[in-house]
Length: 420
Image (cartoon, rainbow, N blue to C red):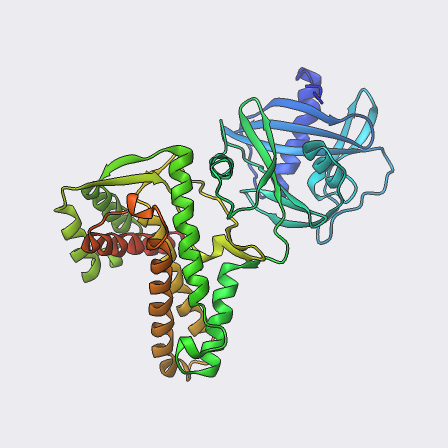
């Protein structure tokens, strides 16, 4: 079905601008300078109605879904949200109360219907931040709506769809794309029921180990099989990325320079560490070129989930793209380094949860858990058929790259102040 696009004349602009300003204020954006309404599409005419608005806010593209209730109607919101009222509005159907439709208990399901094309009941708001507002519907699907869409395809959607078409099934399959005039406004995906966050699965293993003592393989929640399966999944991701987006060739020395610049900028103390200096010195002397594919870009435990069908990538940001949204081709081992850092980090975080007096006696168990699961992850990754075509065959070079990429990920997390 083709929806009507409204003509943005002076009266329409004056009616919509205060609603956009109110929406921005709800998202913590104040002091708006230049505001321009770019387009408005009628997703559902009448009352209740839906009006999808794209605006330029100080050079940044904003996207909001307005819900239109008749005056005097009861406004019911999804749990944990205030009334969501943005102001008054009038169109050919008469006056209305405008709300943020994604938080409205009666209108959010209609948004999903407008995009997916079939009736569903929205159960909850699964997430809401500057990346996306995510609605979960009936244990069937989730709809991610982007409040700040990119010009052109959204990197995460582009990668998600490309990998799905290339046969990579370790993901929540895309069901519908919400795209208009070249912009990705949202995406509907299969909902992975009973999936556990990868970070939480690893922490459960560590709690069992720290509580019982002994060696990781003897603890009730041994993570090694899961780590091996994660490694296999990561390798399949890179193989599918090659099929979907192609392979390039890059200089090992250039990778060393990129990592060095990143670490010096974000974590100068790490740049002075001996392992990093030795690894970078060796890599800078390398003359080889190696395969580069479109990598995930930040593949850590918190971006994965353990579902009933196995491990999946649950979060596709940054979508194999750089900060400017351009596709990023890098050594596949950069994603591996991210995950190796994450295994080390989760062990440290879990250790900090223990009583301070007990921590010294558990440090050996933490190191053993990290070593065991790093080996398992790498074993799963390197044993995956076909991955030898994408990673260097020189074992020493592989080790040097892993040290560099892992420290590069550590620096990025230090620079961003992130916990995981």
